[in-house]
Length: 339
Image 1 (cartoon, rainbow, N blue to C red):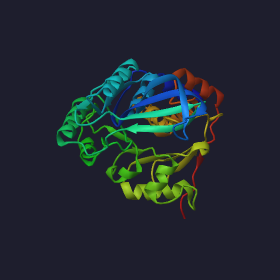
Image 2: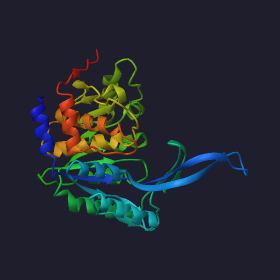
Image 3: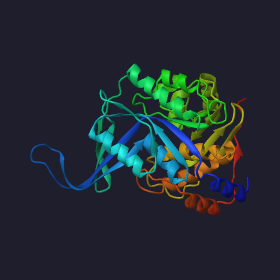
Image 4: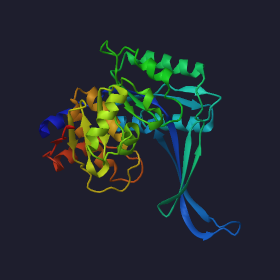
């Protein structure tokens, strides 16, 4: 893999389409300072200085694709409430196309983070994670079928809020994409839903999620290879990308074909949203015709960019080009097979 090939791949990202289905959420940040303890109870008193609303969950995945020059279509479920309206506005402002199902029996997921002196002191979740009604599931599947003919890559962004179900995953397997074949299905998994991912093309768990799915520690005997083998046996998935934090990534194009990609991050300030950036970059690169290894390397560069920033950040084509210029040589090593 040479630098010119990677730069060419970045150029091809522009205008490529990726469809995202999953748990779209509203991130609400309340910033302030604490200078005293309440006389009513032994708790800090926050003097609020700023409030911000940002895209969370699957919405952040969609935002990352647009930031890289691609076209993203977000399909998910929101409530008929003010948070849903705010979320829809944020998606539009980010340039994300949407076809959302409005459920008047379900509230839009909002996570409120209270931050004092740059330290999160509490998080407040407002959500409804119960089972979707058959009507809502049917509406989701109808929208997916309508849009699939213009896409060959689908991201399933599962945050365990109820959108990703057996009916949804079974429905994805029946779709026909732009090429005439089923679109490639990439999943950012939630451990509680692993049994829903049978037969998908690619999973992108972090080390903790991979360990929980395999029932083995990534740092144990056999390392990522043993974990990957267990996941392949459990799910019958096509490929696997395990993000390992400071240790980079472990890419498996099959149970016996593993490679370690080193991390490119120089500084790590905040890992929030790094997984969203990885799967967004990976999917868009595949949509642009990149091979899996090149796409994973590009995703690793993107992750290195966002963890050096505070909050759920995004990478840009310009940032990727600079990152590649800073790391023209890649030390990709083959992971040992299990004995």
